[in-house]
Image: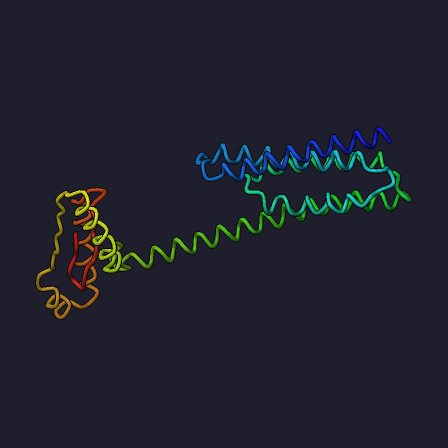
Length: 239
């Protein structure tokens, strides 16, 4: 009875400490600008709670096997919800899995089939967790790539590759506001290709497209990295 009480108070003390650390981490989340430091705190937090789960399992009666359902659930859910590098998560969960499986040999199972089923269940749960996490990561990458492609097409002229009218007006408005706020001068030019209509009529639309591409290339060569070059109209360029 005394031993059980000591185990109870030990777990209670450790869980209160883990909850306090969690509250502190939540309150400091906005201040943790460094991603490496944030990942370190998350890794420590996850390690603490997995250790507490293992310690709780160890103190359970030897004939109690229900905690393996929680262990399997952790092996599935941790790789999915914890925002850590997959390599770090793999090392953490492999350690947790080995320790959890080691408890199998300290537990009293009804028969060997039950024991082998538990071992297989834990291994399948771990593999499933990482497989799902990997699929979600690939899906997120595909979404981000599609969003970048949409943003690019929404702000870029498809013929010349420079900014389009919509992007030019948006950025010009931002630059005008900044120029007014800082009281600094701002230069704005609108360039027009002379006789562009005659070029299209006499030489065809394809020749006109080639002219626009060449004009945009030459303008781009003489602009600075922070200058904004855009196709403002059919044959007009804004700079």
